[in-house]
Length: 358
Ligand code: UDP
Image (cartoon, rainbow, N blue to C red; front, side):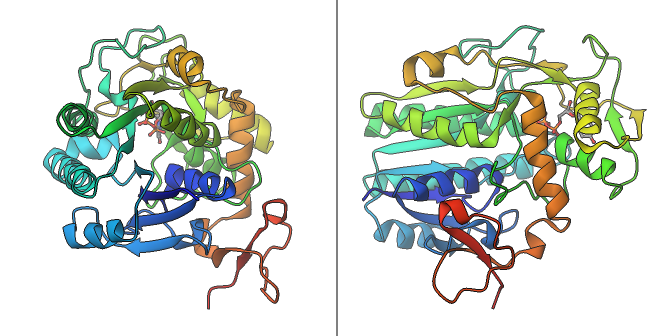
């Protein structure tokens, strides 16, 4: 049975990948400092090492429990706007943590590494879909920090034979269609969960960050890619590492404006979303849409949940059911006799259920 180490596996995208790996029979160890991640987002069978990836001793302990077929690296600060206010913190934590993890992989003879990278590497993006060979010019310290890790991985392959897949996510969105996993950030800054919470009356009116961009309705356009499709892309990319390192852009190829997202949420929730137009958010490019033909043709990635309505619907289902996010959950565990399900309708098809925290 293949063993995997997942840094940041208790976070939003990481937990969806962990779920997929476990369902496919993998053994998973997660290293996560739980600053943004949630224990309740992990199945009981997954070993959680609650530590920071900058902690070399903790990493060495984790690697002792290998060998690992691959390491997936999610643990990072990930907010564009925040990185414009705290550039050195982003560079220090993301670059420092990433390099420490890569170094540990080399020392412990790991051969495959999959990086959660970003579209924020591309700055002057124009309006068309962005391919992998487009000009790189990070629009924020966050994007810069990911670029440095991509480059470090290039040299780790060249000099040490550590093969890597750099996966440049466009906008990860939605949640597990079976309603067990979701998006729970504190504070939440991402558009779709904020619009949903506004529709549900849990927040004051939304601020739209600028309506004077060179787009059809003046608001920013993004390529929202479903988090379950993203998780699958990691497995497709991993297979490529048997022969070489790869870099892929990950999106659906279709962009939606902030106002279109608001409209989609209004349709699905049946409620009006009050909003006002505010100033632009520093670091935001006008349009970010992926050309992801490369991973489709080379690695056989076939995203299934590609329309905005489906993406918003899955996010809405989870948020409506979990006003406190994972805060109202116990521990996500495999079903076992005698367990006390808080919500027995959830997860049954996958052999999992939520248990009250002890
Ligand atoms: N956005 C907005 N109001 C908000 C949050 C986000 O207008 O309260 C916009 C943001 O400027 C961007 C888009 O929504 O154009 C998506 O932002 P998000 O933070 O979800 O993802 P990012 O593009 O930064 O990765």
